Length: 308
Ligand SMILES: Cc1cc2nc3c(=O)[nH]c(=O)nc-3n(C[C@H](O)[C@H](O)[C@H](O)COP(=O)(O)OP(=O)(O)OC[C@H]3O[C@@H](n4cnc5c(N)ncnc54)[C@H](O)[C@@H]3O)c2cc1C
Ligand code: FES
Image 1 (spheres, rainbow, N blue to C red):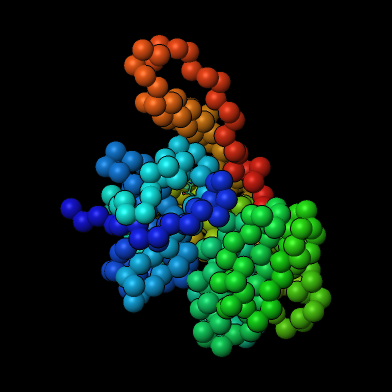
Image 2 (image 1 turned 90 degrees about the horizontal axis):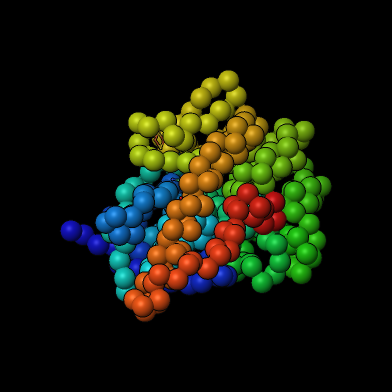
């Protein structure tokens, strides 16, 4: 069975890490906006992850992951340099439509900086003037500033605490871009749902096209289970096959956020069980009857609104 070797790993913070994975065919086929479904080991959960970069010559794809629950924490622990992912399916989803826009603003909130990067690069290669807006809670959490900046004509940095760039959320960056440029053709926004919602509201009055990348729960990723359904205007769409990119002015973000919360209790329980098993595996047999230590609260991805 083919294995997909991790040829590079970088840790951006306690919870955010990058894996560069050898997969020549995927690297050849990947387009901006697409994602893969990963299984880290044979019994592992299948999780969707955006292809944040691809290098056709090296034959690798890059994933940037936030450890928010059982599987992403398990991968954070186990996916070390030289180890392999068990399964990588894709590329999935419709590639982002990189049209003939002359001036584009690419907005990444926190982790969203990684998935928006290939789109910014594609626009730049197509000759567009690219304005990048990145938002983080603070300077220490920033990553890819140079890599992202290299494909932008102008880069606007926003931090919640003002430790770098503008003090404020990415919507402050959007207002600045709209003030300085009256000829913006399109916004591309990727980040937590509440941040994308805020950005779509900020551009609505200006009637500038605003594309967002949605992250509903996915199971099969092939349009069969309906788990990833999202409301787009008066239509119901499946993000895995009809997206993940959609017109942000039509997305029902409240419905998306409600559906994302459906399994919170089960997700917490799974993470807690996994965490307890890890602890038990590392203590001597004689102590394994001891009661489990109180589990620290897991980060709630909805509280994480970096730059949002
Ligand atoms: C198209 C797409 C692209 C994504 N790209 C990235 C990425 O590049 N980097 C990244 O860190 N995360 C990405 N995600 C989210 C990632 O899939 C989830 O964080 C991951 O599945 C969580 O699994 P867990 O067991 O660690 O946490 P869990 O405890 O299972 O879940 C934590 C939170 O993650 C979300 N989630 C859980 N299961 C899924 C699922 N099967 N599909 C989607 N979301 C889920 C839920 O909102 C939940 O509240 C993407 C999701 C989608 C749909
Ligand atoms: S994940 Fe099953 S239909 Fe999209």
